[in-house]
Image: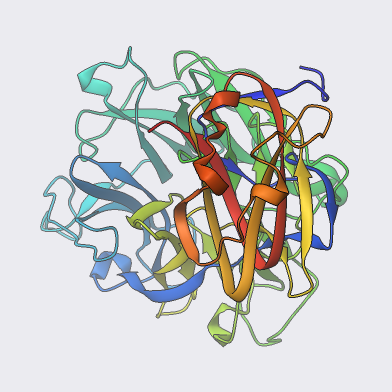
Length: 452
């Protein structure tokens, strides 16, 4: 599609995670927002978790949520004594470790373990492929030695290898290698560890690669994700997800490693510190890195200030209409290692922000359907949002111009914008339009046109 062609958005929600929608802007800017730390979600409180918990993969399943995570059976023995366990939650906030009874640990099966080897770093998903059989309703990837192996399960608890032969052999794979069924591309994808560019690690920097498959067994060649003009940095885990509230939007939260910083010279496991970065994509391969600053910093907790101190886990859960929950492993290699819950406003990754002096931006042209404009926005008591609908040439549409647009104030996730005289934008559905947003002391996180 030509970069100047109008985008047919239908009734899909649009985010500002990249600059795609901002054709021109004055007095405002896109702003990255960080999640807020909440309570411990998964503590290392069982004998098989003595070395810590990490690499959580979680998603909605049935009437609640399920998760799978890595357990290290001894402190500091990363990758040498790692197994996988299962948790469940009714609300995505409070998590339980029900007994599975499927795997022995030190002479007992009274545990929540679902995989004890061979292989580590279980990365499961609920297979939405219409062709998936009930026996392989859940699929996963593990790393066995230097290769990746495909697993399947009817229930997410009892796993078997789909075949003995590896599905990918072109390592390195020393992280959580993350597969899922891409519902938009209608194929399996996997994001793995790799090396790219030039730097200090085997001739390159730690990086992220993608491969695709139609059957989960035969994969395309791994290729590096493309950050555009952004510089290459050392990136570990990727935590890539499809953001379902905005179809066509892929989000990634890699752990960014800075190897030459040493906050504690007595730390026994090597140099380096890390934070969590934010990336987005519209095709799953080309990723926007508009925001080079951290999405999440190690913070005031000094036990997060060391190599691999924090990792973003995989999964974004809608734990209330206004709130999303994300999960972060903290204190790696400490006895206090755990997985913490963090929260972020729904759709609240990035906003277009204007301060008290005001600002505005105009969107690129697009075609929509629906009859109401919905906005996720927040203003101060003196702030406001106004919206003008323009034709493709930038001329205000009668009845929907700025002169017809009241100053909307407040804070809503799915707020409807109404013009004076109840003028409806629905009469323009199917035509090419632009939006002009005028903001004062306000944030705009998302918009869409919806049917009523």
